[in-house]
Image 1: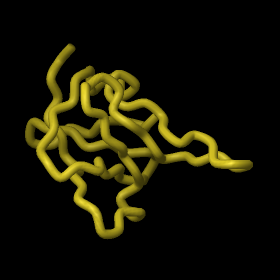
Image 2: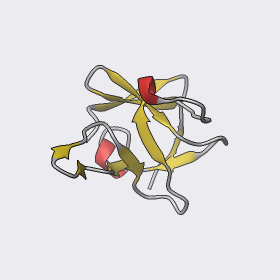
Image 3: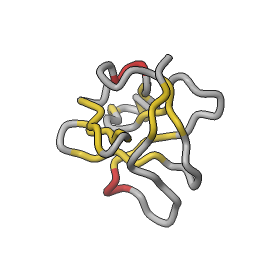
Image 4: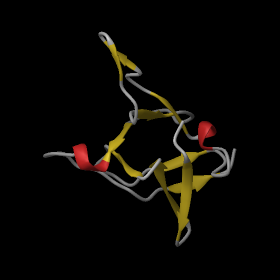
Length: 89
């Protein structure tokens, strides 16, 4: 799971070790869960690809329309967001 949810001005961002994760969404989205427990917010995605392990790929855990989180350095020509509002469960 991602190492931690980092609070910033009432919103959170996610880190996987030293890597910032980008949420692939063009609109402002609220996440549901507990920032002290990142597993309530994100779950692993694309964990295995053929014969190697993919780390750093996640998907939202508890919202209706989920979206992916990937390392910020892998974002190319797509919309993304780094900071998210959290609604408690």
